[in-house]
Image (cartoon, rainbow, N blue to C red; front, side, top):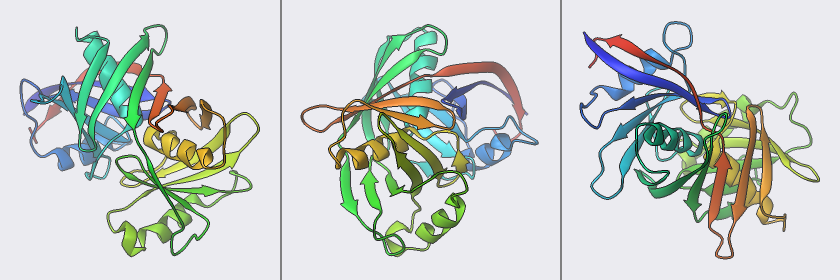
Length: 259
């Protein structure tokens, strides 16, 4: 039985178990995530953020979803990792390696739930899926499908996600977002592969902003999600930046026989 220190964190209520493995590795990550992300018998979280040493950046972040699958990138999670590392004595500006490439983070404020900026890079946009010809498909290092709908309340997001999952183009799964464009913001609900409906999705917020940008919307754009507010802006080259909170909830130690 191993004692594993952890920190519970969230970005706009997209919540995570953060584990620093730079000194000691943590095997069996899929089983570990399934056990401890369970909300009735574990800590409860949308996923596990594993911090590893990197030879090309200041640190490496791995994202293990609640079902044990691994995601390429997590916009809310990387803000939490940036705060975790800053509180551990690392600089406010970091380069963090992910499966989607190196992302640069900047701690802008340490007040309240902190405020962290993430350079998310370029997005690619295409249109239509088999099930949803009007959808916007956006890649932000990971795949997203954006549906503009008339209203969010009562929209069957899980059913729409199940239809997307049946498409050969998304054999590895995709994150689905239902969005309502309003005068000064976009309201969004998220369904994340490997997790289900979540209170927020950082890469999803960027995907929605990229889809709205195709409609000549202003930048920066305010994204209202169930868990709070995120901001996305694009520079003249079309590179996206995500800004939002990174909250630390509590710290603890897990007694785990998988380690």
